Length: 337
Image (cartoon, rainbow, N blue to C red; front, side):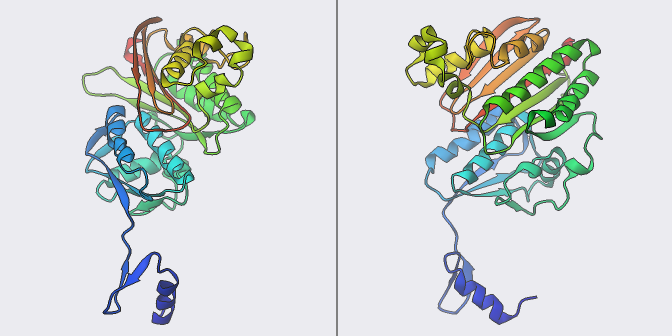
């Protein structure tokens, strides 16, 4: 326990954080901040993107506080974006507070799926940051979950790819072993080859059994790197001159078109013919039944919905709050298998 002199010494040395009134009472200086609230219930992508739009109204506030309502639950796709955003805000100098005091179930879920393991250590977590990681303690014990894991050097990704594939096959069919292996190995490998991210690149899986709706397997591959369009533009002029003429102008519209082409046709890649980003092959294997693929880039999202190999819908959502990198989600509706 500290004595009074030690406390006073600390307070006097940190007057940028604490202030004293005329009665010699010390107070914590309330730093200007923006507060983002996630309401109770399930938080899906539209909920998440709507909530973080508040950041654009307060771009210069030094602190961002995220608060969670009672019974708040994050879908994995939204959780991956949130984790990336929080780490990226810290990287640009923001002070981040994640307050789950009103929803301890969210706190426990974050610990169980590995969220805290990859959250920047400088982020303040309320009521606390777990001392022990439930994800590491109970890894592999749930048949509904593959805990968030880091994508690192190629030789170190094998275990993560196997865990993703095994859990997928368990909830679908052994007939899809090749599809699972292709999707997970190529997308994880693509992150290793192209991401250039200083923030951990991650992958995870969650199985959902919503009431009266098809069961689906949600798999995320998330990195905070340069993004697909930026990667392609590094060699577009030399490797694909015709595409360069079409997409050379820097615009969100052209970036959306390039990302869509990379996933759908495979005619565009960083290294030219035969050296694609792995998206076309992964998409072909994944889309044999019903799958929804969501690709979140810096300021836009692209959604491709397939049924039995046929593209049903393409949806774009431009003008999003910036989140760097590439955040891909495959939603496999396994009741269709």
